[in-house]
Picture (cartoon, rainbow, N blue to C red):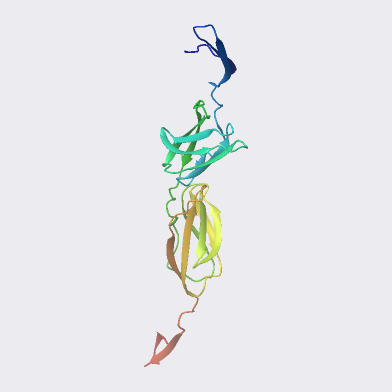
Length: 232
């Protein structure tokens, strides 16, 4: 027997049987109908931009449902929603630039929610190395203003050997940072650029030599009434 038009919720079913002599019996049961899909899952805060190709998607959904996460149309992972209605799914394989994160919730009877969608932008590309524009090979002072170019709005850090000497935001794509405490002799100047997502460039390095030794004092000698200047 096919039962049609059952209502949502509890439906009481009674079955009667009667034999040829007129004796009858009955049995009662019920069928619970749930064809209502759960609500779409809700994502907790998903940042607009990240610098990694994996990310933990968290949120809320109907308790005991199964949340499935997709990157675009590609299945990325699933989790059972706990009794508190929360889930945590780590997705991997995000690609550079824009990724669409889609999520659905499926209840115990197979009803599937509508799709919750969000976008996330991946930028894990390091900025270009800073470029020095005015670093001479030799100077005669123990401080010097290092200038150059770098990715716009990156944070440039300049080091004297391995010691941080100063930082500056390259808001216009340029930087000037004063380096103090240069040593007499050879010094290594290093610089990196760090973008807003903490991607750090390779290191630019240059040598600068501090020479504060005075020149050799000249001496005057005579030879047959003529004067000659020589260096000792």
